[in-house]
Image (cartoon, rainbow, N blue to C red; front, side, top):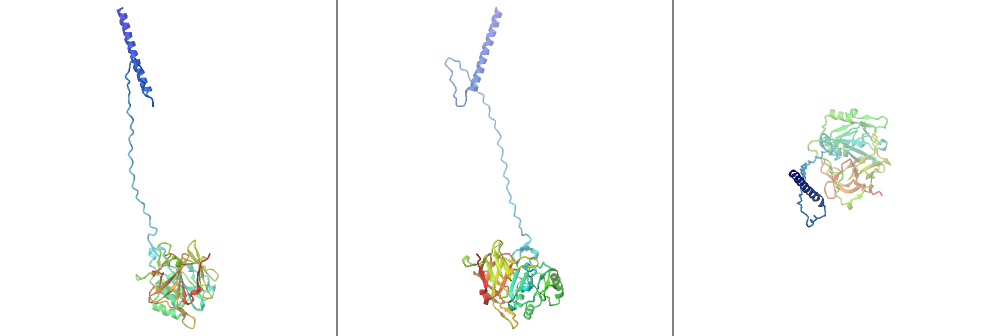
Length: 397
């Protein structure tokens, strides 16, 4: 019996222990599930044994804050200079190789008779002068930074005022024949002279027999360079040389005239004589003036391309017959006058001045400052000041 009681007591202890454990388990379960978001903890009914709830808090997992990578300092990439080893040309204001800057240019006298047109190589000239000679015809003087063509001409005889223009650029003067006035001027200036009627004629010039003489004399790059070397002409400017023009930095000349004082210059006509009245038409799309003469486009025979210019200068000069042969002379040395500067579709009045015989002709705006040309080719009309009404500048609507 005692053993049976002991066994019963052990069973009661285990039973009671089991009940306690079950109660604890139930309490933990209720604690874990009963406290939902928005709900309070329920009160224990009276007479019910309270059970201490055990809440187990789990430490939150803390992710490490990433360290921001340092922002790299950006070193700006320098913009390469597109003109390294280049300088601006004295003739056009455009960029050329530095080694070419000191080269002497060539000044070439070109025919302008209708029967000798179109000229060959005239489109290569960086600056083109036009002036009257005898009989109302005009003749050109092309200033070339270098001659590239093998057919340049036709070459014609010199006039003394062409010698003056060539001397202002320290140019090597190329022509076929000359007047006695030109001979005196060449000697006075001491200019480097290549004349087709002198000893170098047979080796510097050739004749195109398909064209009537004397309008058929031509030269070219190879002939000119060989002659210069043989005659041992200086090929670079002296240090004292002064450039002829000033150019705008960008493609816009800063004319001195106020806007309301400028003339719209869509078309410029130059009535040199009844024989020739060339004119220029402005193209806004490229900012160039296109030349016409003898009723049609003035083209280069070599290329078929029309002559175009960025700048036009009309220089009014005192001009008269020097003798009974109708040879012309002009008041150029130690002289001054008026004129027009035309670019970008507008014209403005200017003045010009040349000091002495060895100076350079300078052109000034109405403010007295020297004008700035646009980079590009320039045409200069040396025009009688007695016929200024024959220069017509007009707006074309």
